[in-house]
Amino acid sequence: MTNSLLATAPLAPLIERLFAEADATSARDAPELQPLLHRREEMMRSKTEYATFYGALKNFPLAVSRETGHLLYMLARGLKARTIVEFGTSWGISTLYMAAALRENGGGRLITSEFEPAKAARARANLEAGGVMDLVEIREGDALKTLAADLPETIDLVLLDGAKALYSDILDLLESRLRPGAMIVADNADYCPDYLARVRSPAAGYLSVPFDGEVELSMRLG
Image (cartoon, rainbow, N blue to C red; front, side, top):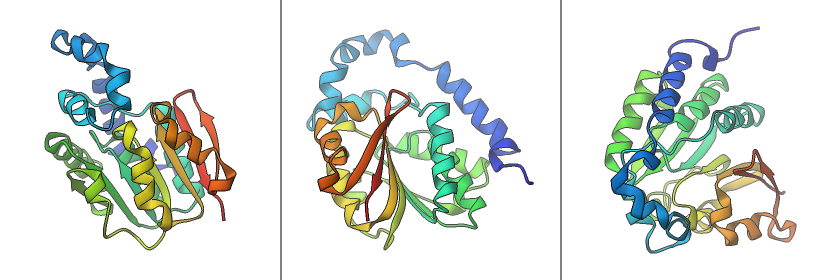
């Protein structure tokens, strides 16, 4: 039995270092951001203020948890995923998990969208350091535009971890490409009630359950 790429260099030490850096970098400790953070919930739910909110946090990782990272890897491996779409790259920690699974699946294509150029550059450097950049296409800019065209014919796995208020809008762009059994992981989906109502409705073509307190895990029905 071979070890997972997640357990060996270069990915294992890289991911551990990135989580350590993320743990040490909290927006809550930045005095200049306190007025913004007091309006956090309101701004995360807004379709007009999300750019201001996330732009102010451009130097912070906003990373998935370790548990969510492992969930993404396991889903991609279990699905034998070849095509993955990610909304919200940030530093690329989640991207590393999914790209590792693609490598072990024999290859594939991971499209990820990030509207902060500095974060996209940092993610690119991390993916190159992890040896998986050849599997990943980073699209810089507004995901409502970057994910509106040139998508795979079928999509096996989706991660939604960008502006929460846009989850339903992003799903609109991807839904026709989701294969039966495709999985969607939505981080902090509580901030988009419309999205939750949609994926929790079998009549809309989904089966969905909460996972680990912060994630909504959904499956596209046949």
